[in-house]
Amino acid sequence: MDATTLKALDGRRIVLGVTGGIAAYKVASLASLLVKSGAEVRVVMTEAAQEFISARTFRELTGQPVGTAMFGETSNYRVEHIALAQFAELVVIAPATANFLAKAAHGIADDLLTTMILATKAPIMVAPSMNVNMFENAATRENLSLLRRRGFHVIEPAVGHLACGTSGRGRLPEPEELATAINDYFARSNKRELEGKRIIVTAGGTIEPVDPVRYIGNRSSGKMGFALAEAAARRGAQVLLVTAPSALADPRDVEVVRIETACQMREAVLAEYDRCDAVIMSAAVADYRPKVVATEKIKKSEPTLTIELEKNPDILFELGQKKARQVLIGFAAETTNIEEYAARKLEQKNLDLIVANDVTVAGAGFNADTNVVTMMARDGSREDFPLMPKSALAALIVERLINIIRLNEEAEK
Ligand code: C5P
Image 1 (cartoon, rainbow, N blue to C red):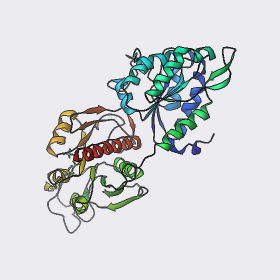
Image 2 (image 1 turned 120 degrees about the vertical axis):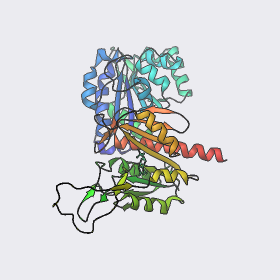
Image 3 (image 1 turned 30 degrees about the vertical axis):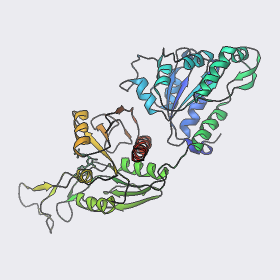
Image 4 (image 1 turned 180 degrees about the vertical axis):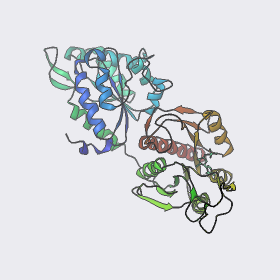
């Protein structure tokens, strides 16, 4: 199967739970297909699953740590079952054993996978696979129907030769069929919740001229903001991307305004602010600019050079002051006391959500393709996320934005 036929998987965050059935070996091909199709896959295995296939296989295929134990050492997350539960857009359990179905149906949480299942709000898809008699057993039938009523999606097992030597219903469908079922699920749920909404996204690092050839700048690449603009457009929003110099190409279906300085960014954003529904300020705006910009190139005649700086406007603060219905999302790139500073900014700048990251952590912050963030919302909720690509993080931030807009609209009614 060609990964390009599974288009709806691109950028999707999937937690793949593997339980201890002989068919676990087939799931390596499934993981590989999902990854090749652009999905972000995190695998969680039960202890029994590790008797059939090694965690290392999944680690190599996904390029990510595999969750194997409730109190394991491998994780790069704070509380692994919660981080995975929040990360998932969809949880897929394949193969799902009779034992797993029984535990899930009754809320038993005695390992990482079953605990994560209880903690997640993401939809759950199960692909049962077992001996035909076990599958037809009344206990299994009732557990499955209970899970169906609770909204679990069930991929029916196929009929065929079973590893136990019998034949009948109980075979795990082939990896291609599983991948197609997952792809179809996302294709159906590709909603355009932001249709009719205008969203401003800022990106990149502003540059502040010193003279006609020099400037003061920062290391921001614009990757986060460009990914956010693209993710919001994908959900149907009319997006205006106001970006400081960036080497990145214009994202698809997005109106792009390229500026250089903080003052120009402020003007471009304010001009559209009244008409917009949300602003995501991911730009690294320079806090200061040279007070005087030399009209001629400064000569290197003196042994020292002093440039006096003056403060730039805090755009996001101003937006917070002028806020009417707009949802405001800010970023806080910190090197120390991340949570404390982020919480303070949320309050001071009158934001709905702040995305905080420690720029000293490997794989986080400027110029990286990945990020590790904590999000704090106005309602006091806080979520920690694992290392993930900026594209996946952008989709997640846009989902939070959709929720905030929906809650605001419901409150207005
Ligand atoms: O106060 P601090 O610069 O850490 O706040 C970061 C947030 O504020 C970011 O969302 C950034 O885009 C925004 N900001 C701004 N104008 C400034 C400085 C930061 O809008 N002058």
